[in-house]
Amino acid sequence: MYVRRIVLCCCVLFAVKAQAAPAQRIIALSPHLVEQLFSIGVGDNIVGTTDHADYPQQAKNIPRVGNYNQLQVEKILALKPDLILAWTDGNPPADLNKLRQLGLNVVDSNPLLLTDIAKELRLLGQHTGAVDEAEQQAVLMEQGLAELRQSYSSKAKVVVFYELWQQPLSTVAQNAWPQQQLELCGATNPFANAVGDYPQVNLEHVVASQPQLIIQPVSVNEPRALLDWSRWPAIPAVKYQQFSQPDSDLVHRTSSRMLQGVRQLCADIHKTRQFFAKKS
Image (cartoon, rainbow, N blue to C red):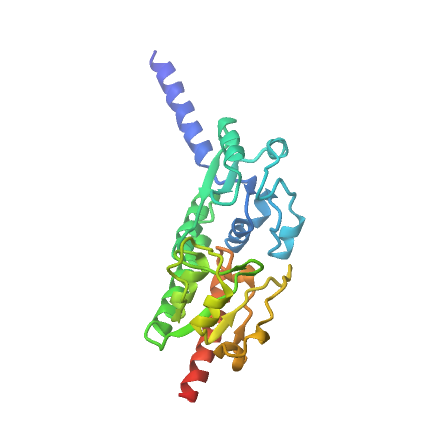
């Protein structure tokens, strides 16, 4: 009996250690998770991902196992992952539930606030064994956000319109990711309290809000059509050619690279701030 207890304890300890071992075969079900894993030095452990994972360059060679609408469960099983990183708001819930029911190790990622990026980096570090690298990246993110907040929180507000999409005309509001960035940069969004995070807006209301700067995020890899604002010269931003076109791959993805995009966005907003300060 004593020997059996020892053997049982050893088996339990081995199982715990095996379960806690750093992941070696990772499926990352979003572009931002792929970026984060590469940023902490474990990108080579990714064996599968979803469409649109295109950074860094090596990410383009990772096998695809699905997209926003559907995950290829059989293909995922064939890759024998020991860790699946799921994007709660970007993956089909039914497919994620199926993976869990099959006993796979699924960990959720759902960053909602700018400060969540650092938290998620640390979480990824724990699951992959890259704790030190993740901590370094997390600290850099926290410091970068703090510096931006300190630099722009007391500056004069700049009225902006964020053209998320041109047809139908859509913008950002409430707790949307870009809305948090605008607040960080000291910008005022007239539609910040609209219903929903990404509301459609009436063009006449945009004109009436008299934005000083129009922000048109666009992807370098997947360019989109932009609204031609030249037909509304009464808008200050149009009259004085105050436009910003940040890289949407930077400002819209919840990864460490976001800091690079937000720094540029804040700089563009500050440039407009200085322009109108000279005119007053």
